[in-house]
Picture: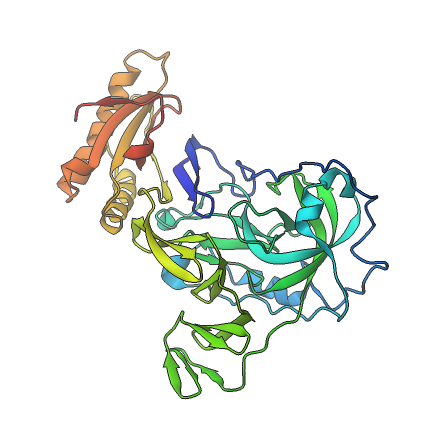
Length: 419
């Protein structure tokens, strides 16, 4: 299935354009390499973070039934509309007195730790694994942004070192699903320091990373139970007689508790974490606002601030495929065009370019591609789209298709044509 898509990893504002790439969502196509700058000098790397390998039998790993049950809940629907279909799996407490090697130390000297079983200390967070596209056309305006749970540095900042958790036998075990506005991960993010036991390996496809922690098992350092006086319901929370709204952060002793429907999530007090949709986010993290690609929220000093994303949301719109030399729109085309129209209705700030693709070696191919793009534009105008929001263009490659994307990110080889 060919799809036109471009993605914005809002946490790092990395823009990815993939025009008419045949994407298999089992094969990430844009991996994010991890930094690996060796230190000038270092002592010999130990085999783990401690003098003896810890007993991790009670820790959470990819083969655990709780993680498998949770992963089975995930479908391909749009998370922003239905919410996360399952809560993150609760992490067991780490044994007292156990410590690990900071993940940043390992990443910055990564070659010396390869193939070793290591005990890593950091916090859990989703890490961009690559770009994949939904195969269900009915979800074409849902923004799939695949990520894996990783262990990252606890220090604030956009460029924190991290390692993804991975199990080649169970590729989906540590996968997050959802879009930029709501991400659903199998393990709780930013809930406090964790220890991860795993073997550091060079990754192979489809992991989407240079290095991963294989066979990872996780525990939570000093987990925080919700205070007895904090009561959560589907509509909000009550603490010591005071009512708190959903997504509100409640200071309790030396900790913070986020209010979610029917539950609370508590972590150590921090001025660098924000709470939204039942999840904790770190300083600098950004999320989108449902239905508006131009508006976002950024976590800044424990508060959400609004910001302009530049209208660079995520678009996954199915292209129109035509028989050779045909210009006629079919009922199948019209069903896909209704999806484009729905997208324009939900995202009022985004203007689209309609690109007719052609094979440069074929006679009159450009004229046919132009006619197809104009035909698609005319259908959208006839059904209520504003003329000023639609441009047409032609470009070589991926012949016999008409594709859709944000005008601001038109492919560089596209030639705009008059309607």
